[in-house]
Image: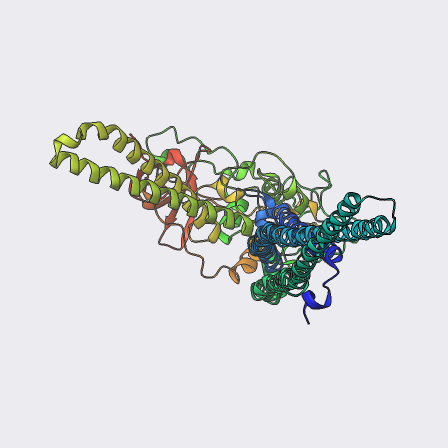
Length: 615
C-alpha cells in the first residue's frame, strides 16, 4: 500500500493530513509540558508540606519527637520529601527525554514536509506547463487546418470561375499550398508536443508523484512511530521511579511498624514522673469526744492553734515524707531552735552546780517543729505549682525529684561537652605554640599566651560549674548527705498542708487519769519516728566528720537533739555552727547531738567534705 499509487490525486488532502499530524504532535508536546509543570508544582507542594510539619529547632516540638509515634511521623515527612524528589525526577526526565526531543523533531518534520510538498508543487507546475503547451499547439494546428481548408476552397472557386485570370488562379493555388504546408507543420508540432506531454504526464503520475508521496508517507509514519515511542518513554519515566517511590512507601510502613506504645508510655513516665509517692489514708477525726486533756505549753495538740498535726502510724506511716531521709527529718524535728545558753561565768563549770541551762526551758511543742518543717522555703504547694511560671532556680529545686535529677544530669552532660570543646581548643593552641617555639619565623609564641590563659580560665570555670551541679546531682541521687540544715529542709520538700492527711498526733493520747504530759508524748513521737524510718533507711550512711572539738565546759543536754558533754572531752564534729549558735557533734560513732558552740573549741579538717576554708 503506497500513497503514490493509491492517493495519486489527493495532493491537497495529503497536505492537510500531514499538517494535522504535526498539530497532533505539538499538542502531545504541550500535554507533556503541562504534566511536567504539574509534577514540579506537586513536588514543591509536597516539600512545603513536609517542611511545614517539620519540628522547629530549639522548640518544645523538638522534644516531643522523642516518642516513637512522633519519630515515625518525622520519618514519614522525610520519606515524603524523598517522594517529592522523585516527582522532580519525573519532570526532569520528561522534559529532557520527551519535550526537548519532540520539539526538535517537530522542527525537522516541518522542514521535511515543506521540502516534499515543494517538490510536489514543482512537479505539478511542470505538468501544467506541458499541458498548456499541448493545448497551444493543438489550437494552432486546428487553426492552421481551418485556414488550409479555406485556402483550398478559394483556389477551387477561382479555378472554376472563367472570368478570373490565370494569374489570380495561380496565386490562389500557391496560397492554398502554403496553408496546407502550415497545417502539416502544426500537425507535426502538435504530435511532438503531445508525445512529450504524454511522456511527462506518465512520469508525473508514475514516478514523480509516487516518489514524493512515498517520502510524505514515510515522513508521516516516522511521526507516528516517534509519538508512540514518546508515549512509551512517558510511561518508562514513571516506571523508573516506581521502585524508589516504593522504597519511600516501604520506609513509611517501616516507620509505622516501629511505633512502640509501651516505649512511648515509658517516656511519658520519665517525662512527667515527679518522684513523689501518693499520700496515705486520712485518719478519722472524732469530734464527738469531749476534749478533757490538760492543755499545757508543751502540748502537741494545742487548741489555740486549731491546726491538725501530723500523725505517724497506721497506713500513712512513711507516706507523707517519701523523699526525706531519716537523719534529715529527725534532725529537723529534734534540733534546738532556741538560742544556746551563754558559757558559765566562772572559770570552771564546778562553780555552777548543774552547769548551764539547756534549751529545755524554752522547749517548743513538736507540732511547731512540723509546722516549721512544712512552711520552710522553698516548698511545693501542690503539683499544679510545678507548671507555674517564674524564674527557675539554678539547682532546679522547684522541680520534682525525678525531673530535677534529669535536668541536673543534662546540665552536667552539657558542661562536660563544653569542657571537652575548650580542652581541644587548649590542646590546639598548645600545639601551635610549640610549632612557633620550634619555628619562630611562623609566629610569635607570646601572642598565644593571652588566648591560652583565657581558654584555661574558661575550663576552670566550667569545671567548678560541673562540680557544683554534680554535687547537687549526687545529693538528689542520695550519694552525698545534705550540706546544711537549710539544704536538708529544701531537699525533697513535700507540702503536706495541701493534702488533708494531717491529723493531731496526740489528740487521743491521754493518761489513765485523764492527764497528758509533753515528755511522754514527745518520747512516743520520737519512737514512732525511729520505727517508721528505720525500715526504710537502715543502710543510711552517717554524716562524715569534718573535724574535732574539745569541750571547754560541762553541758547537760536535757532537750531533744542535744547531747551531754564533760569538760575536756574530745568529740567529732559532723556539722559546724550555721549561725544559730549550735554545733553538731558525735561520740563513738553511735551517739550524736547538738551542743552550744561557745562550750566547745572546734578544730575543723580543711580537707574534709563540708568544711569551710578559712583564709
